[in-house]
Image (cartoon, rainbow, N blue to C red):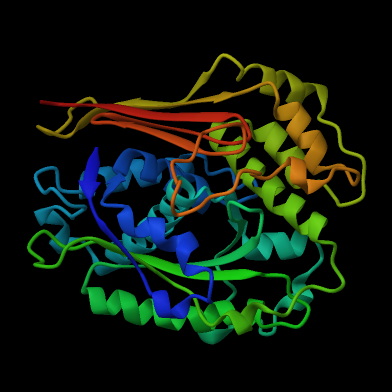
Length: 375
């Protein structure tokens, strides 16, 4: 299900020489809703085992029916206006993550994201946090990721359903939140992004919008001096793999990898090896058929996953102290003149239809969401 959307960037906020890299975002005029929902589930999923299996799929179960089928742009249904304000806020926050991460990955070839605090904890880097507050200016950025060239990125995500000017206001505030990490003298964040989505209510005259901005380049010139950049890059990729393992339902493997300690030898247990091999032909992770679906509503929803056998080689590389990260990141360059990225082993791809969506990751994961409606 494709819906119209506009993507804008605050060109003046980007450092000299960087605007060209982000200009392809301006050419985006549609968003693949089904693929976006898969990314929503993937990146909002905790990087540790919680035991709440259904939490991986609630984005689809709850949010898919929230979008209007009759509107051409990404817009909420008429009935959504009467939903509790708390639920509206949750939708804005979750879709803010899914829409911005999907757009950066699908358009610019970003490598993936992992919760910022999780990375800091994994590498014993919590001293990078200047403030412990989880709100306001002391809040840590939502994610740390890698762009197409393997540069470390801090990403703060926003979302609103009220007015476009409210989105711009939230994004401006998000810059201050992100700076707590990027301004630290011991920090290694090279690029910072604050992005968000405006999803209009059914009768709102404004149209759906995704907006990105970046503060002054000078705010990102202070680099980590005590942490090996290779370790940070591997930790980010490792976190992205852990999230994908959990989303696929390979919980034993994900749990073992999430407990990996830098510098130790890592090997999957026999149980995890067997688990991962069971996904080589694909596996249905979640399937639900409604007994009495509403007219025009979802009657059956299914999510399946496939994991290529090269996962063992990838995990060996992201847990080895001898692996050069250059073999793990995207090596082809991107220019404004030739931005038709080829999809290879280092890039994500997305496939969308009216009743299904599928994403394929650089690490060999294949996720497919499909559903039927009661027509």
